[in-house]
Length: 246
Image (tube, rainbow, N blue to C red):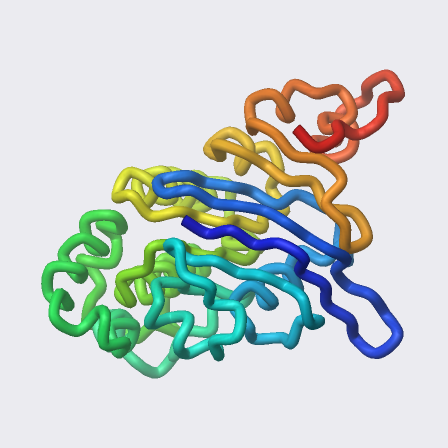
């Protein structure tokens, strides 16, 4: 569904990404794991074309080359990004925030049905449609942000650190909701600091270090890999190299 190859990004003299390639299938959750500064957020922004990439990249969405499309037209093609920090409109109600997500042409005809699906995915929001978004908890605001992205009727959803700053309880609710999103057939590319929980719901994972993909494979296999457990799950384990490309 989403295939990315040859993706490189530079900020001045700093090379943030180097020749990154990855893929996300329909109804698949793929997680990107890496330390702070490894290039995870830049990767999502470059895929969504909100930061410029070096020439030579190829981004294919649903079989169509969308490499040169600007960010707003990528939304029309079915790509939705939920950035770190959520970016919701605090003074608007939950309903108003969600309906703003249906602005793309691809979403307008099915707006009412999509809203029903979003509220089924996030039952808390159905109880708070008239509530001003800024008065909600951080977890509820994150649900609004994801729900607004889903209102655009995407085929692939990009999520940047959705559980950041949330309580363990709200994080659990959020990850459960992402599992339900996958069941609708949407592909999810997830950058997440909670490696343990993200690997528990993901189908596959990529490991990124200093802008390069250094490992990939099924999430279950990486979850049991001693090097991954040591580097990303905070567990002591005998020394081992990170797994190579599968």
